Image (spheres, rainbow, N blue to C red):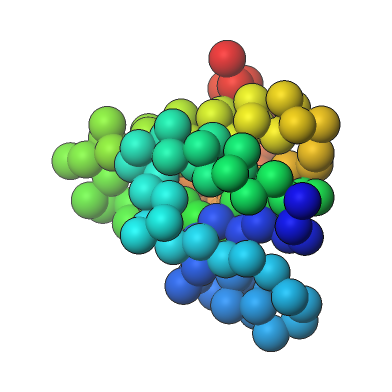
Length: 111
């Protein structure tokens, strides 16, 4: 079992985490969030002690035209991460912005 697994290797949060602690940060080449099963597979393959999802589809205007892609990245992939983490009994931290969740505390739950 490795330490901390971070999705979103090149994003602001992931880059800062990489400066603060030894983490395994995965980018799109290793786990494409557009293919949600890839995230679960990466979690099972690396068996980390915890997972941080710092990746998201945040391009607001293009998301309207690419709703399926945005939903896969911001909804299905985190749901698959949650299921994989639950199966391994490890914590998952999902970081979001008001561009993904409005901050009201009300959102759709994972399946």
